[in-house]
Each structure stands twice: as structure tokens, then as C-alpha cells.
Length: 341
Image (cartoon, rainbow, N blue to C red):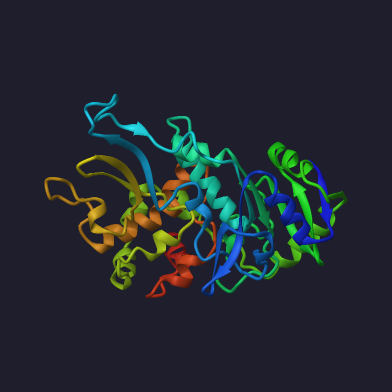
């Protein structure tokens, strides 16, 4: 893989935006930073992280999957046809924080694995070049290092960049990333790995050490399931779902058919395991009838089930959004400690 330097950030952004790909980068609006289609001169570097995670680029909050029409005089009446798979434009995402890129990698192993492939995720995800921006000034709720990540992490990225004066240092991590950078003008070959490693050590020294999850991950499912602390945590929870909608690795969804006199669409919408509606059966039975069952499911999914299914990879990537936005101050780190007692 190759290393490059760019003397001027804006010049690089203009080249990336002019590459013919859909260009997404951090921009500020109404006091919040989000990843969006933006003009290069409107890209912000003054942010801790985007307000929401970038998973909605590949897994939209509301997505039309299929449609049908009811006109019997035309062919294909009342037959669902896939939507959008042939209209996905290759994308370049600039400014992903390494924690969020790691979250995308977790989701990718859910939507693409040896059992099945979700074509709606795959078409968007595999056609994207993901350029991460190292986190050189983490915030008080950041704890990527506690769950195996790094503010200079590389998982899920094609290129890792860091701010270098008025410019950028860039390191390619995949063939797709190298091919994309080679297609741009204004880049100079340069050794940046040493500087990047030094910055990485400096920033990581300011972040918390690893959470000890060995006991929880080594215990049987039922041992963790029957731990006594779940009700105490659930008593504080409002089941509002804030944590799940902010989380970069939550991927629950519901599928609904909507129709009118002309036809209909099949919609995929984000859902949350914190809602009683999520698991209610047609019979009226609900296997997770109270907050205790729902709270336990969320944390066991992040800290027990995902590691079991993804070779030990933690389902929490330490971005801190759930800690920051939980209205009753439930902290996943404290729950992880309880699970490991």
C-alpha cells in the first residue's frame, strides 16, 4: 500500500468531489455535523464525530425495496419488482471516524456472510470508497480503545487520513483505496506512517484501557442471561430506543407493505429491540414482555452474541453516542463491568 501527502485540504476535497462519484463528507447544519452530499468548501474538520453514524448511507432508515402496480392492462401487474439496485451510484465517503468504519465492518458481516447476502447493502457498500479521518482529539465519552479499537484504526476503511498542518497525510489500506487516490491530482508520495504511529500512541495514551470482557464472553449464554443486575439496569431505562438508533452497529429492521389504488411498495424501516412491538407475536404473546428482557437483549447482543458470531469482535465500537444521548445516563461500560463480575 502507498502513502501520500496533500499540502492543501481543499484541493484534495475538490479532486475527490470531481471524481465522478457521489461525494459525502462531514458538514455542519443547525449545530449538528452530519455526513452528507456537500460542496468541498463546505466540508468541516471541526467535529468530534457526526451526530448520527454513517450506517444510513448503506442501510437507510427508510428504504423502498420493491414496488408493484395494479394496472392489469400492463405487464407485470401485481408482481413485486426490486427497486434501486441498478441505480446505485459509486460513492466516496470522506471523514469517517475509525470507530464508525469499524461499526460498518460489523454490519457488513451481518448483511454479507456465508449464509446469505443482502443485495441492498452489498450494492451500496461494495461500490463505496471509504476514507477515514483519524480522531486526533477524542471526546470525554470516546472509548474505542476499551473495546479493541483505535482513534487511528484501519478496519473497514480503504484509506486512512490525518490532518497534517494545512494539508493531509494519507495511507492506502486496500486496492480500491489505492486506485482511487491514484486517479486524483495534487497528491505527492511521502512517508507518513511514522508520523501517524507517533500521533496514534499519543492519542491512545489519553483514552481508557481495555474493558475486561473475557469473563462475560467466556461464560455460557445462560450464565450471563441469569445475572441479577439486569432488573436494576432496566428499572432506569425508558425503552425510548435512543441508544439503538444512534448505535453504528444496531441493524434491526421491520418490513412493511404499503399500497394504494395504483400499486404499492415494500418498505424496510429501522426498528428497535427496545420496543415491545418488536417481538410481539400475532397471537399476542411477547417473549420479551418487560423492560428487563429488552434491556438484557440489547447489551447481550452487543457484548455477547455478536462476539460469539463474529470471531470475538465486539458489537460495541466505543463511539460513545449511547452514553452521551441516553436520557437516564445508562453507560454500556458500566453494564459491561456488571456482566463480567
